[in-house]
Each structure stands twice: as C-alpha cells, then as structure tokens.
Length: 618
Ligand SMILES: [Ca+2]
Ligand SMILES: [Ca+2]
Image (cartoon, rainbow, N blue to C red; front, top):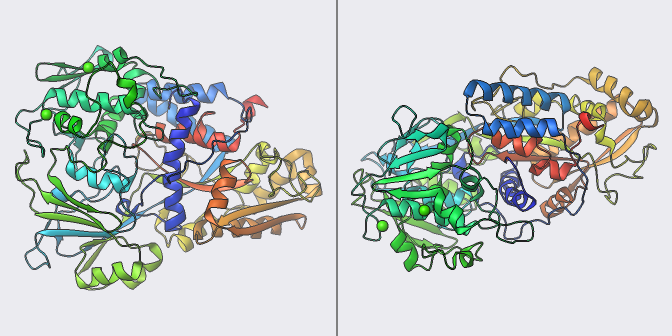
C-alpha cells in the first residue's frame, strides 16, 4: 500500500496467486465467493530477479499514497477519479471484465444474503424450512478446503468461510453493505460524533461488550482484544494478512526488512493497542480513512481470539521478552484450534472431506437457528450435482459451464448477477526478459519483438483497441460480467462509472500501430507468442481474438497462440517472460486503494511483473 517494501510485495504475490488460482481452476469464472478455492500454493513463486526494470513515476506513486492518507471523501474521490483517468490514458493494463457471481441453493434455505466483501456462507443468518431434508443441518458442497483455522494466518477464502462462523470481530459489515458496520464484540461503532474517534482519527476507541462467553469456557475481555491484534502483528507471517493492520497501526508494511531482520520494536506493537478499563484503544501511526480501517477490522484476520485458549495451544504468550521467536512462524499455532466466541464451534475437520461446525448455545446474540453446519470438499462436479439434486447438499458451487444442467429444476434457486469486488485484466510487459522464448528474434525485424516493445504507448493502445470486450462478456461470460473502466470495480466508493473504456475499434488500432515505434512496427511487422493455460476459456478467447484482429490489420503482424500447463504460464509470468498476460485480482477489502496500488504503483504487484513505465519518464 503506501510504501510497499520488497518483502511486502511477496506478500501481495500470495494474494494475487490466490486469485490466479481461481482464474486457473474455475476458468473464466466469476465464482461466487463460496466457491473460491484455497489460496496460495505451498510454494511462493520466485520473486522476479530482474532489477531496475521499472521506472518510478513519482507523480502517480505520490497520488496513490495520498489517496490512502486522505480522510475527506470528496478529496479522495478527486484523487481516484484522477487515477482512473491516468490509468486509461497510460494503459499499463486494460481491465477486461468485472465478473458477476451466482449463488445456488435449495429453495428450503432461508435467510441467505450476499456481501461481496466476505467469502462463503455466514450460517448464523440461515435456517431451513421444516420440509427440508436434514432441517437443522446446513450442508455446503464446494471445491478445495481450508488452509488453516488460525485467523492470524489465514489469507484465503476457503479458510475464511470457516473462521467467519467460529469467531467474531469487533464490528462487522451490516448485511449487504460494504461501508456500513454493526457493533459485535464492540458495544458501539466508533465515530467522531460519539467521541470514540479522536485526534483527527489517530485514536479510535472500542468499548468492549460484557458477558461474551468463549468456546473455551472463558469470557472475551478487552485484554483478549488487545492480544488478538498484537498477536497478528507479532506473527506477521510471510504472505499473510498482517500488513493490513501494520500499515495503519505501525506505519510499516512488514515487521521485517528485505533480509528478514526485525525492524519494529515490542514497544511499538504494545503501544498501538491498549486497554483502559472496558475500552480498547487503537493508536494509529498515521491518518487513515476510517471506513477502510473498519473494513479491515471486519475481516477474519481481525477475529477476536480468547487469549487463554491461544496460549494453551502454544501461541505467543503475550509477553515481550521473546516475542521475536513468534514472528513469521513456520506453522500456524491455532491450525485446528477453536479459540473463538462466534455462533458456531468447530466439531471436526476431516481433511480432504469436510469441516463440521456445531451450534454454540451460549452465543451472546442468542443461539443460531441451525444446529450444525458442514462444508464439504467435493471436487467432482457430477458428485456435487447429484448431492444437490437429492437434497443432500443445500448450497453448492456450480461452475459456469454447468449452469444449464441446473437451470429451471424444481427445488433449486439461483440468485444471479451478484456484484463482485474482482476484475480480470490484460497486462503488457514493458521490459520483457530478453531471454524470453516468446519474443522471437527479440528485435523489431518482423520476426519478433524487442523486449521493450510495449513501452511505446501506441503499441499498448493498438492492443487495447483490438479486443472485442462485448464478445468476451457475451460469449465467454454468458452475459454475466461487466465491461468496466479500471483499475477499480463498480460498486466501490470513488469508482467513476463515467470514465471511458476501450472498445473494439480496428481503425483506431491501425492508427496507433502506424504511429508506434516511429512507423517501424507498421512497416516491418512483428511476431509474438501469446500463452494461455489449458482449460482457461477466458485467456484462450482473448488470445484468439488478439490473433484474429491483429493479423487482420496487417499481413506482417503474426500472433501465435500457444496452450501451456498452468505452472509454465505462472512461472513465465512472474519472470517477466510473457509479452502480455491475463490475470484476476480479488480485493482484500473493498476500497479503491486495493486496486490502485497493485495496478498502478511502481512498487505494486503487477508493476513488478510488467516493468511499469509511464510517459512521464520517457
Ligand atoms: Ca498493548
Ligand atoms: Ca478471555
């Protein structure tokens, strides 16, 4: 975000990889979030070793940094509108679609609602009508399984789905809203008006509700709240979610530098969250938009953990002498523990098969209507479908290519066109690895492209105008996607719906190619290889469109579309070998900053892979 260190970039990589995997597995997806498979693969891709490849654009970087430090919404809007305009004009990448989701359930399911900011099923809201099969048990059949149940470690949606039901947070999203909150463990949502947000937002006070029982047998106290956030910062595992709290609370993105040395002190962490009577006080290191801070507090990494329970499981004891021993651990301490106070308790985790949760009768908001909730991992579609048809599963993940098999079937309900906070874009690599096997001769001689081919904006514009976005939406996404300007998505505050988008326009594409590289591109032509991974219909369609449209412009333009296995695609992408690549981004929290930074900042994730150059430096 504001200052992304190199090590922090690798964290973001994990988040991106999560999204990539979704794109890879679900192919041309818009997976309703219940279906998003677990995130990072066990091995983090090699951080690109190319150095000095991207040129910083101080103007854009500064504007992005200003955006997250600006409190006034009108001022923020101006900043993000400007950034969206720059994104359109510079075309470092082009957003292809914002996919829409679907939710499938048996008609006997009651109470379901959708919030794009949290994954999976929130069972506390749900019940089943009395004619249902297994009326007091809700069964979800999906793909993948959680990585962990430790809230300070989890950074994937499959883990989040379970954690959301076992733990509570200080505040939570008010049903469908992503910018309105209800108090949960906190008694009230702090505001300037009620006096709990002070010092220009640098002090935020949460009075803690009394009498909240934990699954472990104790109570939630202000000390548990302090412990939960301090543990998150103490742990700060590589590729984990801690950076989101470290940034506002300590003003850093990581507790470690690039070499892994600890760069924060015990005092800094301890001072950031303090207890005073029944209050927990957050001391922010710098101004930060309150709504974004609340969004971060409403997610699983901000779950309130019962301290006594956590210590029993070998977690950080809450003392400062040896705290660094608990930094970046190899394994999560609360891997299969239940130190929550939420509406459901962990009953059993049968690996590769299911996680079952049982109602917590002492839940402070009253016991859930359901007695039991089970999330089953059923990777095979035909099996999931059969379970759904028989009523053995109540909520099922249905990949887009199979929707016809279920449409109109009695007893099954489908909720369509659910907005997501995710988009897919095509990225241009402006400094391609010169050893890349996908650039032919490596020269502008008609037999390849030079590594900096895409650093010329006219080349990027030529490509942008050669994509048939409408066909993509209609044929690949079956109409269930939107063509939106980037880098953010529709539905977020400060998203400008009136910002123009690129459309298929071969005349304009031709004009730009004629201008590119001083006319040499048009005169000599080029040869380029575009990869897609087998099974990914979206990537395949875009690659083929580019081939068809570019080759129609000039007989000297040659595009080879090549299908490869997913690991090959991924490796080539992070090494900067792909001239263009298509990838999706799922926001960590619903704010424009979580798009502006990765897409546009010179230290953002995509910039790293692209060798981002902007005209300001040329
Ligand atoms: Ca403290
Ligand atoms: Ca406690």
